[in-house]
Length: 409
Ligand code: GLV
Ligand code: MN
Ligand code: MN
Image (tube, rainbow, N blue to C red; front, side, top):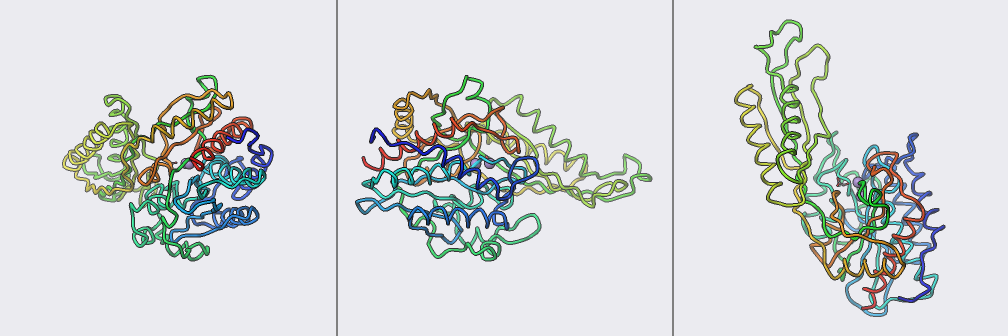
């Protein structure tokens, strides 16, 4: 690497602070759900930053924002990226940091007057969180050819509002075809979002891959009835069934190694204190580093639902919201991330990612790797999410070094 090449740490922190003011919550976090007015404001701000840097800015048909720094030769680009949408109770760092670090990498090259051999780019992918529209990582999934633009536009949120309509409303249905910029390699920096790095005494993470994800939506239908007059034996209570399923999934995690499970959405209708409910719509998030045990967990949940449905006379239908296999990253690029950390004298350890990331989709297209920085208290998807300035700058320097190396190889 050009030995003096460094991220401008103060500028990285100030850009992140500026973005975190958009959709800021009183608890100190961020709420920029995909394709809402707050997301639009964040997008407008990002496009402004990219344009001010002199990047070529393009928007594709799914709203992915692409900032390109032209290299010396034609051909596939070294792409960095992440997302700027958040969950409803998000923090300031998840996704935003990866996008801003990518922008700062290109800014550092501009400052140094350096032009890479290959094109380089940073992408802010649409709806990574999956908190509003399903599946998660939707923008990068479409970019990688896993889902058509039409199918993605047809997705609706829990209020029935269409993704395509929202893209048009906020002015981010672009002209470019997703995937228009061919990828030579993809690198993403992200907060760890878990406790491992901090509990190991700090340092960075060279991510070896991402665990498998299965999101299910279960609709349970019973019979609404009077809470005071209906004897227990006469009830068909989907609220109780939802509780049983939740507990079953939790117990399952004790019998299948590596298995995680939780229900993050439970909507009860009609939602009156004195009515045995009619319907419950609930989600299940099942994850495992290995595909076979994940499939085993899903099969066990489905079998339990069939049994429950027959025993308690509750109708249960199950729909896939997201399903992505465990994804290993590319050895050569993981090693490159480690080499860059070593050049800066930074400790780094290999680890798998518990969270989904756009890198999981990009790895369908090209060699991919990620660098993690510690999350204080292991918290994420929480307003208290926090990473130190020093760790952010360290991670961004590693991103810069690794991206510069692969862009000139
Ligand atoms: C993305 O944030 C995920 O749910 O892993
Ligand atoms: Mn993220
Ligand atoms: Mn997230």
